[in-house]
Length: 115
Length: 113
Image 1: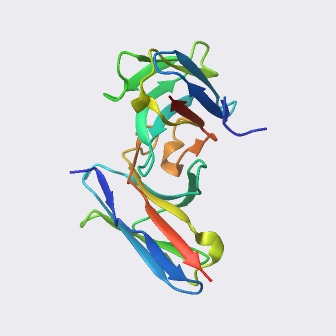
Image 2 (image 1 turned 90 degrees about the vertical axis):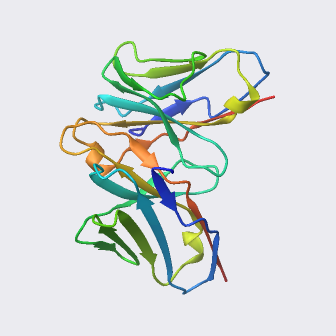
């Protein structure tokens, strides 16, 4: 599979629990992005990595959110002490440097439901 | 004001109809423009890039007016399979410079028999 992979596809968790999502980008892509999409809205930018460096974070990424890309390959997004407002689709995308002018390729997303 | 604003929709059209979506953006530094399509509970997928000269891909035509900061998408001869949400997207990416994608809220299209 040469696309962007995300795991898990679905996650149901109780409020207050911690969750972690994983994204495996296209192998040669050095840029990786996380977005969040709530019902009826377009995706919103959360954070961006170039290789292992996290270069930009949105104000949407509260202190309860942390993202890592330790070896410049896969990335994880952790949400601590989940709240019902965290329920959303979390999307990952990747690109090559200079490739954004052609748009990104998104993974299938992780749908989080906080109950 | 949102950075990218789209027609609120939804649009309900019969098969064979022509439908047009409009979008405006506020960041004059934007350099790249796209339409994405998103099926229900799926990820967004790139439909087409949008260029100042206008571009066409089969039944789909996209236009960009930089002076008015306006983007459009025209779908001719609508098919049932065109039913989806259409997302207007802008980016200040160009060359090797990084630019995040900024999405509109999307417009829902339903094509009925």
